[in-house]
Length: 310
Image (cartoon, one colour):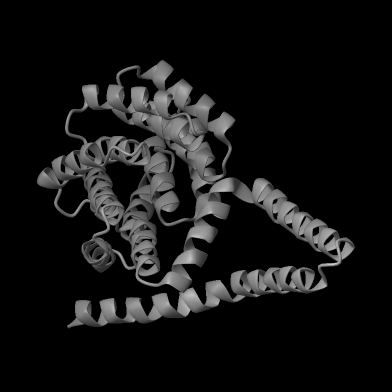
């Protein structure tokens, strides 16, 4: 296999990754690496493809291999930053993105990665500054526009978020992030059915898309009061992280026990019994909620697949 063929495989992998075909990109890069096993750029790109395929342990090995082979390669450190974010190692990710920017101060992708890191750490002002800098370096980049739109929407600026999504979709009509952002804007406006159509458009491109599934779940929850309550509760608990969510559950249990004890001491045995039953109902609801929601979502996805096949 010639060097030109390897470069063609690399370019093909870039295109496959851009359209969401992570597995195809992995296979293309494995073919290329069979001929050039010590090419750091190929290892960095393979790490990105593995990360897109949600194989983060394999992605970490490839990213670390790329850095070891070429410590002065900015994209190797940038990819390592994304891998560390996937492991929630925000401090390690900050070091990797910082190193990438030391090596290439005008790399828009590294600034975008730093912006995403700040967003993950709940630092919206710093995230906005980094993403805006990335867009100055690469105007019209759909990923940057979507990330900025996400910040706008989280801050309640729906029209600004809509404008970002439309700008991205004008140049990239099938961009997954832009479709999801527009769907979230529509949900915020109460246009549930239109948001659902955006979710379906994403899932027809990639049936395993997290963004598409998130949007479809949110739209589904809006159409069902019972499932909607569970969805919002689950989304809230997920946003807290494992440690704080456990503290919330323990706190709720302790509060319930204190309330029951206080009611019994006050002679309000009937109210104490109602409080105990309410806690049991809450526990059962949060226990069976995921299974009920999953079955409901599976029926929705089956309909989507049938229409896509047809």
